Length: 170
Image 1: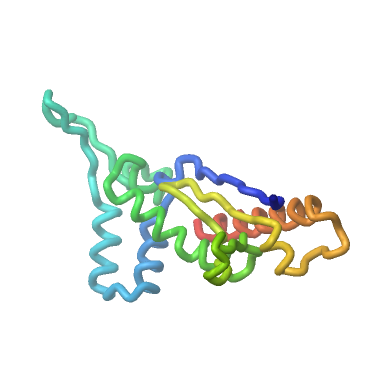
Image 2 (image 1 turned 30 degrees about the vertical axis):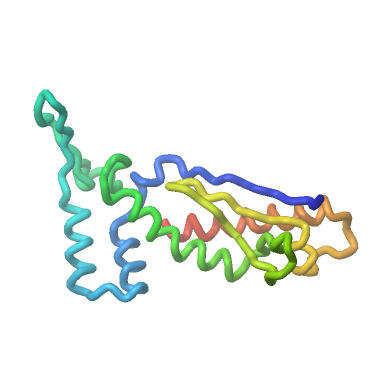
């Protein structure tokens, strides 16, 4: 048995707050050509959403710029571009988290494989931060404290950093 911690972060209405401009920056980092970045940005900012059912198309519409008092309000939770936008926005957040936070470290039960590290796991707009005893032991943090206290201190530090990175990313 080991001590461990798991914190789930469900970003409330995250799809609606994703800024297309930030997604374009991430696409640039991934090597998308400039012309494609601009097309992507314009497409997201100018897209108009309607609902179509068996009764026909709705006469009301929604768009990211529908309310000029709330600029950059997002691409709508139900929009087809929402999930890829959110995930591309999370890429720099997760990379910063992995570079600066203590991971959970696992060993395969057969012990034939080396240890492997995991910082996060997630689905859609849920991100869970992972931490376990082996990860804390290997980090060497607070060695004079009991393990349960060390886990608590490290997960609080990891969570604070994640929140800073997430806030900074928009």
